[in-house]
Image (cartoon, rainbow, N blue to C red; front, side):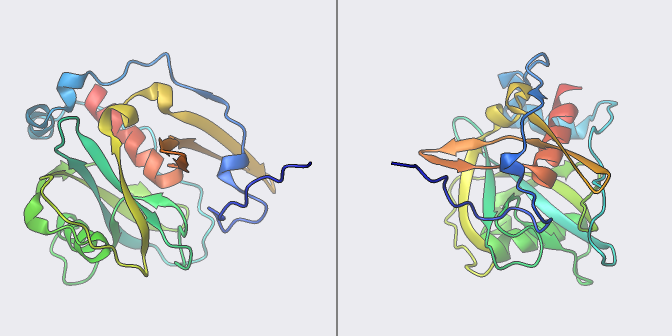
Length: 234
């Protein structure tokens, strides 16, 4: 009997491209993980209060969308469990951009948002029901420009674990948590490259197994997490 490959939800609108099918060029297991004591809440607060001199590794993707640039923000929500985790979402498949992908809560900045942090908190509340008073904003990571022309400010915050989520079914198919230690270990950062029509695209992926289900973290989300690793390990 022939076993058919699983049917996968498309993770990109680029034709004939699925990041999960692109071979892994390697990982960065030679780089040290961020030590556990630097992932504790007090250490994270101190890092943003007295940031080191550092350089982000990924700041701009090759543009492939024919649209005007737009400012956006995402919340990088670090949940204060006994072992800190990062809250991520799985976007629904009907969205016009980044559909079906793992993402941080976030979205386009409104004219009424005073700061990127206000955008991130508002969007997190609208998407997953995370109340702003559950979040202690620590600061921002550098601007990240996506191939879809969003200029994204990642806003890092500590989240009290006594929250109840309420997912917006039009935008979010699922929400889940990944240990921060897993994401801050370069041995879990896989490198990929893909060339089409003479254009080479490179990206990271950090697949996380939630039971029997793979949560494929890649692209902009993985790029921002990679920058977070560089910030914490500097």
